[in-house]
Image (cartoon, rainbow, N blue to C red):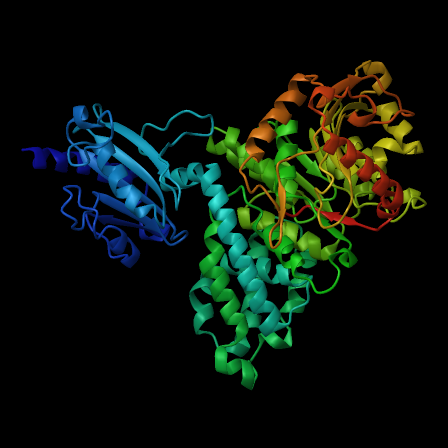
Length: 633
């Protein structure tokens, strides 16, 4: 009788899955029942029997998808709702939750697992619990929606996948995997294809767009080596033609990819290369990107894949990295901007120096987290992200980032942010959040390119009362300049945060974050400015990865910083509130009370040494030309 009743529960689940399209072949989803033909799954469950006999065991349903072969959904069913979950979750034979977690912990050795426990034999009595176990972890997390409310029903595959992608441990594993692959791919491109540094990330982004074309995805592996480039470019063009953007933008995007499409090292292999890659190195590159990167594109919205490759490839550039004149905006700084602005579904975000689009993608992630309906999510993607980028190749990278997500592409402009026609166009869109990491001035005498003119331009794009956030050299906060007066004449300096001295390592540019309220004169607002001393973000320098959150302390530091800013809290040695004018210094160090109780002799010696080094070398460093780009570290 129990077995018969359990079949009733399985039928309820099966019907739900059918209603949500799990069984439709065109969705690319595979549903296996009480078995699996996936070799890796078989191996992991080979000794997972719930009765401790060491034999193989299987949950009722195992769901996989070719879009991301490292993600599984598994179901365990029980007919009696009283047997939904035991107090200690240690009775897998008798209880649904206990059973599904038993199987999932085996599978989580190599998969991120969404575990679903279902009990009950009728739709009205059915009880559902959803859990997430990140790959390589034994931590069991209750699945929650964007508002933090537990999910207590069976939902469509894409919704499961999207909610899983927001989990910080899943995101961290995703970042680590992609980082490792980007190093591997760089080595292949560098040693076998000899592609230029600036074209390497274009090769990746172009391939991802080409793989959006179903025909190319299916046929590239069988093409002759000499035909791959032409098919690759043709597929990119077809995908761009589908995009609802002006032809001029499509032509601007296509041009950088056209150069790669005629690169001699990507065509028919020479005798030496043919021994290792008989079908050509380009096909090998495409195949590896298809296997290792394409899964990130389909539903994950929180990850700047193109920016990740841009940043990683830059690390391997021959010679002095500074000579490239590029500093990457760290990923956690882009995240911090979104939290400072408190973006949500109602936000409309503009970046007038968009780079690869890192700030916009981070903002989109936080906006999607707060979105409740599909209508809100589509509105965010299509209407609430605005970017301007002057460099044609960088524009192609940013535009590809947007196209790969099916969002924001119509609102990305290849132009100077000082182009009156473009500014007029974006003003009509009424952006209410500005984010910016501007190009850094060549020298103090280069007044027309001063960073604060970019800040001024960003603020003038925003609706009055909107928030504008920029990360700029500390010299902008402490050195006199006429543009400071112009800014305060029309806008309010809400806050300034002193950032870690090595934030942009290996380039020694010391920076601060400025937060402005657009369209409200500083004097009229009669508002004191909040200054934060955010010098320690918990990141440490490592030999091969740069600055990383090695000790997992950033989330706690980030949350404290944001809370202090939002509540304008004052703490000795950490923050202060002060009335300032254009003639004053705009940094916490100038006004903050020192908490002397915590000072040591070592602290004193360190400050004296750093001050001496700043006097010797600081001014010289501020004169170096550094172009900043929104890409992840």
